[in-house]
Length: 293
Image (cartoon, rainbow, N blue to C red; front, top):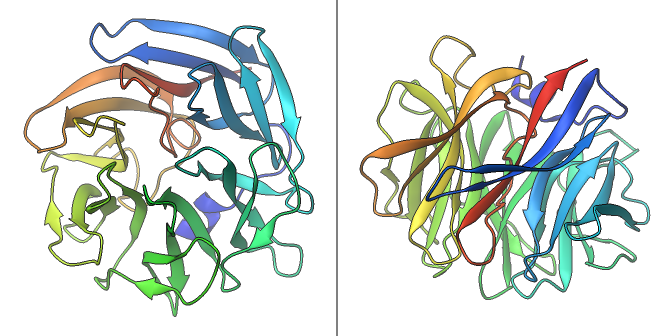
């Protein structure tokens, strides 16, 4: 499966049951919030600690933990959203990646978090959103330009994009650290997909994981102390693939690097942990596991 295929959102249901869960990062205790009889993906945790945002069938929904009710967020013309969506630091805006009708490729849009008219931010496609700088001024994303997938940034109101990586092969999942000084990402440049970190201007790119797994989508906790990411076993997938319906792990390590611990083993992959899903108090992660019907 090539990168564009794996990133492209499949509109409609799959033959899966989606299990929205949380896990306590200290105890490992898992709590099932809701089981959906269709595909949902990629929860973001809202600042109030009681709501999650997820995507399903091209639309964006808000899930209230207390009432156990999901509500559609009106995203206007953005009705083919994939699992790359991010909340602004003040949680007043929502940025989404939507497959536009003219060519089917993903572009980034911003709209009010309660719903409203989306504004196009990245006219060049494909572009897949992953991060929002803590000062609210910049978006980070993975984009294919001239046959190469690299990390880019752009003003959150739109403007000229800046390329931060230029190594051959896939560079993906760029997400700002809470301090704003770093961007975490994953790169296949060493042969396996590994977690990397760089300065927010693209300098100082350093490898942070060194194991024999393919590691994706590093998410830094709000307190800046921990990093969660998802891994596939070597040999289960090509290094540049992150497909659905695989046995995977959610791992945890210090933001300074070093040893990791396995937090969760599950059946999932694509859709499980694509975007930052840390609780505001840095104590829990939200994620999606799957069961085949």
